[in-house]
Each structure stands twice: as C-alpha cells, then as structure tokens.
Length: 328
Image (cartoon, rainbow, N blue to C red; front, side):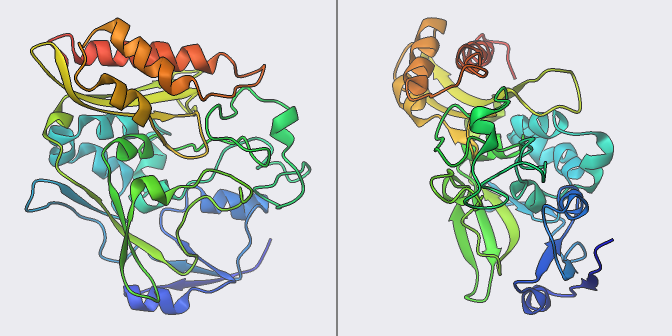
C-alpha cells in the first residue's frame, strides 16, 4: 500500500490551487488507478475533479458541439446530438472497453490515456516512457502491437484511445484551464509523437486541467464510420482503426476526413491521403492509391508488418461503404 491523501476540488480555481509536482487529478480513474496500483505512477495527493461542472454536452451557436471534460463515455455515446451529427464518435466509444468502464471513464480522461504497451506496464523491463534513458524494450522485443508511423528509436508505442481517432478527424480543440488562464489546443497538437521525449504524451502542462473538448461543425460527418480491427470482439485494443467521413457529389470526393488508430504514438490524421482524394472519383482504386501514399512513410518491423496492408484494406473498405449510396 502506497499512502496518499485524497482531496476533492470544489471549483476549477480550487483544483488548480491543489495541484503540484506530487499531486494528480482524478476523474473516472479507469487508467490512473491502474497505474497507481502497478507502481507506474506515484502521487502524494490525489485531487478529485469529478464533481466539477463539466458533465454536459451542448450545441454551439455555429452547430458544433461543446463536450464537457467530465462527460462519461457512455453518456457521450448515447447523446442525441452526437448520434445525429457525429455517428463515428458513438461507434468509437462503443467499440472501446466494457460497459462498466464506459460508465466511469470521462472525455478528458480518455484524451489522457497512456499506452498499453506491455513493456510500459512491466516494471521489470526498460522503458523510456516510464523511465527516460533506460531504453525501449518493445523495439527489439514483442512487436506485434508497435507503431508503424511517426516512431523514433526511443519509443514505438501506440496511443490506445478509440474516441481520440474520430476527434482527430474532426479538428476538435481541447479547452484547458491553468495558472496562466484558459487556452485552446488544436487536437492535432495535443498529443505528441515520441521524438526523444517519449515520456511526454501530450503538450498539456502538468498544472493544467482539461475542461472541455469542442468540435466545429462538419455537416458531412453525418455520413461517417469508425472501424476497429482487433484480435477479439471485445475487451481488446485496436490493431488498427479507421475513422472516416466523406462528402461525395456526382461521384467525386468534395471533402474527406480520415484518421487512423493503432499505428502511431498519437491518433494519426491521414492528411496525405485526404489531399490525394479531394477532387478525385470516389472509387476503390482511388481510395487504395491515396492510402498507399500515406503509408509510404510507414516503418514497420517484422512482427507488425501486417499492419500496412491491414490499414490499407480497412480504409478502402470503410470509404467504399460510405460512398456506396446507402451508408449512414
């Protein structure tokens, strides 16, 4: 048993005043509590922010959404505005974890999930993410789940979230409060690639608190899909996943949003493929060519080489379904 003090914040300012080098924020706790038990994370103080007023989903005046950081995953998946405007958000949430975990997990906490790399969670093995400078056991060890895009010699771990993949496709913004006041972080800048600092998962300052996620309007996202490919039907993280929304008129791709999960240290926006598809015929051959251009930068190992054709085939299947005429 590792002793710590438990404190409950009553306001955002109260929460920020309580945080420090020896303290952590607690919301749903579905990832943090595991890490405290395993010894991956330690804290002298746990500051509970679950009672702060961030549990609502609201429509913005421009038609986008404001999702409070404290909204439970199950509530977000079931919300009528989410199901109507951004169905792939609902699909992604339902594809993750169990019903019990979704009832506890929060939107803000989902963004801050840490990798499920087996070496990160095994205190007997070197891991640059857990102990900087010790080495990356996954690079030469069991590599089936490793990243294939944006890796570095210091880390080949992947980001575990399902929800974050469609959020990346939607150009969401993360709203945070901190000692310097509120700020907004574009979703594409919130999570980091490993570089030489794999211990840093995000650009969030330790003294900052996520208060909301905002999604700008995207009318064609009503026609969106999330596909998760995994080794079993439930309780499994993605080998690869695809979040896609596409606007097709007269057989031509007017606009498209495409993001990948299970392939990188952060939710991976496939901007090369998007650019290659705009203005092109909505055909399987074009979809395949576009994602192959994106995957030209992939650097798989022997054990995860299968991810390259798996991503390609999944993207082609999802985009083909969305443009078949009856998809919703």
